[in-house]
Image (cartoon, rainbow, N blue to C red; front, top):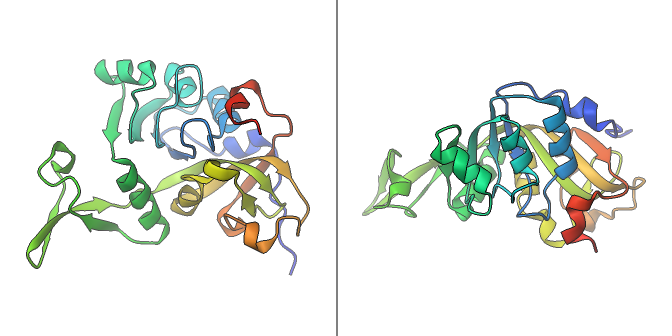
Length: 230
């Protein structure tokens, strides 16, 4: 069996993202954030996007580029406090922000990838985080139903990929990336290096290429990645 070669041009992959799409962005701060894919998304200009990311990055990078370009309609994140643009746009009513505790965010994405509709937790009971959510009683305990979080696209940054899209992430850059790939209809990856089949040993594969649709090789990392240069 010959595995398909998924290496291609970044602009071709991003051109599939249309207005109104739901887009997951990997990353925890800078590590694992697909800055080059985000920059290409800004260049192509899809509007009315729902962006799902752990954070909103900082001013002048990543999610901030999309916000400044007026492409984001809704942001789902665990915090936005490091990005004054996101805070301002939320306070002005120009974007909707849904705050999700970090662990709950990860689990909502994970259960989507597992094909589940959601999960029940007692986290948030009696707080604003539980307002408007269905409550479920099991025995003597009451929990909140947290629905699965799916996306049309996941954009990821990996250290290495082979042509099929088997991925290796560097240290903490793994973070949300594998979960998001499994929860999205299509996964687009920017890889620092594309290596031949077999150079990523099976035990070193952090995400199977079965969950990857497109891979673009970066080569030299732009300045925005300086904080994670190894």
